[in-house]
Length: 422
Ligand code: EPZ
Image 1 (tube, rainbow, N blue to C red):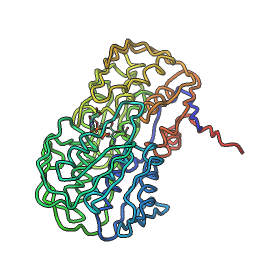
Image 2 (image 1 turned 120 degrees about the vertical axis):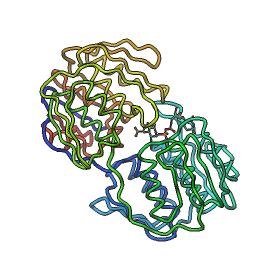
Image 3 (image 1 turned 90 degrees about the vertical axis):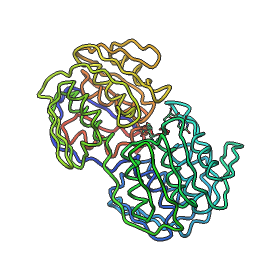
Image 4 (image 1 turned 135 degrees about the vertical axis):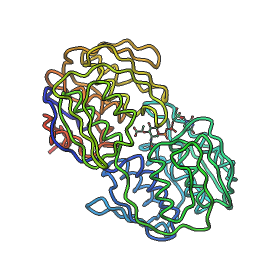
């Protein structure tokens, strides 16, 4: 199992290019199942989760190839199996995103139930109930979701909880349904807008993506298209916190400031100077120690849960006391205990962590438990005194492209310790 070894104490500086968004690429790749012509995708991030989604479609008989510039070419006309097996689904919950397109295009789907994960139970009841309301016959047994339908029927769907992939699954399914579908209380994340723009490029009729009410007029067929995936706002936010926590100055290329309002506001509160343009963001901490900030996660456009661990690390060394409240997932504080092993001082009360910043964290061997927790521990290692070794970094490789190369480019003393012999 690979590990990352970090020597703390360097103020990061320089330029870094942000990759395509994992959480846009995954639903968009799933959505290519709808097209009855070839689709090409650009700016796809080279990540383990993307590789898994590509393997999932390949396993169904879809012709899917990736070139060395991560341009993905897909032709779903050869799809012959409508199954997402446990072996693939257990490594990536987002596999549930093939349920909607398989039903909408082929009227048949067998998708292994995605188990929970470290951060929570992660149920998919809203995905299933929405598709049932659209006419699908769905049974869940032996760990599988087995679904069939003639042709999905448009319907009015009121989601009791804001769900990102639930909104995505239902929007994809509605694109080929008979009639109009209205999704109320829809998720508003930028990745939803990117998916809608991709479906529209294939001929779908969608209005309201990015608001809490999305209206889709089903069409008979969708043609092929080319689409460029949006930049990853969480990767961008992570590198901005890396600059802030080390007192450095970093410029992100291929980043969208308008996707990060809540995060940029908190970084300014922490004392960072921020400038931005159409496709770049610059953060200058001017060598100063950050000030503590209060964070409360909530659905977009509020503060993203995927940036919570990174700000917990920032608060650990900030001047003052910062409160971090997690409202989305029931168990997304595992990084807090690892930060405490590095000397962070905090009190955890349920879903709240009250963090009193210390002058200096100390490097330690720590363990990653989920994608963003591991990012938070890397950030802490960048500023800790001495050596930090982050174990189980396969979590990181799922969501951050070449993280040690990008951080080293910014001056960090970081290297990957491969467990592979020889
Ligand atoms: C997406 O997960 C992201 N993953 C997550 O990013 C992100 O943390 C999350 O949205 C919240 O922003 C992808 O886009 C691939 P939800 P998702 O459905 O869609 C409850 C990362 O680090 N819920 O919006 O699975 C659920 O339990 C990952 O990149 C139901 O109750 O999250 C949670 O409390 C981690 N029933 C809340 O909704 C359902 O059917 C929000 O979950 C679905 C969800």
